[in-house]
Amino acid sequence: MDNLDDFIARIRQVTGSETGGLHEPVFAGNEKKYLADCVDSGFVSSVGAFVTAFEESVRDFVGAQHAVAIVNGTAALHLALLAVGVRPGDEVIVPAMSFVATANAVSHAGATAHFVDVDEATWGIDPVALRAHLAEVGQMKDGRLHNKETGRPITAVVPMHALGHPVAIAPLLSVAEEFGLVVVEDAAESLGSFVGDRHTGLFGRLGVFSFNGNKTITTGGGGLIVTDDEALAKKLKHLSTTARVPHAYEFDHDAVGYNYRMPNINAALGLAQMEQLPGLIAGQRSLFNLYSEAFAGSPFGEVRQESAGTTSNYWLQAIQLAEGLKASKNELIQGCIDVGVSVRPMWKPLNRLAPYSAHPSADTPVTADLYDRVVCLPSSAFLANRHG
Image 1 (tube, rainbow, N blue to C red):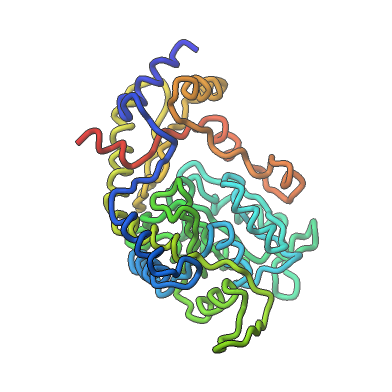
Image 2 (image 1 turned 60 degrees about the vertical axis):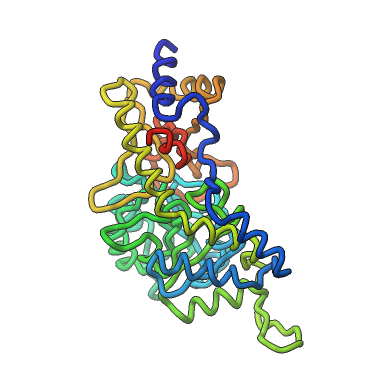
């Protein structure tokens, strides 16, 4: 395409000639020291001081009462759904625009993902469209909302803060209350993002974070659940450690549990990363300004900006292409990849994926449009350092 070189040049105006991966980790603190300390202690599995220290660090940063470290984000969301009472045969509302793990966690719980559209402003669940959809397909039966087309109860909603940008949480909570839905936040990408002065993950019964290698901070692989409910926190810790009943030596288990606790060696890495979190977020936010300047006045479109009343961690930078470039998205992406510039599309809509194409779904035109027009840009926090 004629303007491919211009598109690449604007990205390299920010990144320089070596962009690296889409979002690479930054190891510039105590990572090696804490990992060595963990190995020297002999406690590298799910029991150890680093697990507790990491939980406390995230808990205090977020402002939650309790935090439970889990082996990965998908497992954390699975466990969170079980803890709030999602059961086989239920339906759970999820955005059609999300990483597949959101829907997979619902499936792991034995429930059915029920897809709804996102809004243009936040790229998260559209509360207005959600209310209209539930009013159309739902009916109250025995005090619970049911899908009148499938007969299954709809028990929960999982808003996901896409690319780190908070959803319109206040009106969504209102809709959830109106229809009796439990809210579990998929905050996998939004560590360091706020609505007003309140951190994402604190609005639902539970909030779930991910620390995969491409997140703002990483534990290599890991997740964490936050809550202000002490009973839920105890339940999560119990279920995540195979539901073992405390005893000096006896192996007794009072429920079907899961081996889901984060290992100490992963938490050691995470604790060192938490010490750098403010600087990493500052780098990601600086990248937004740099990309906005690079694409200002261009024909390509607009760089994704945080919504009014929110503070985003800008985990992943993205440009929403102009309508006229929709047909050129794949060509732009392939052209960038061919010269070593790490860009990616948004996730394929979940209601188009083979495992979920037959699942209940509202119409999702905004999700479809964003998939056709959004390109994610190189977003590693260290890229901002090249500009002083």
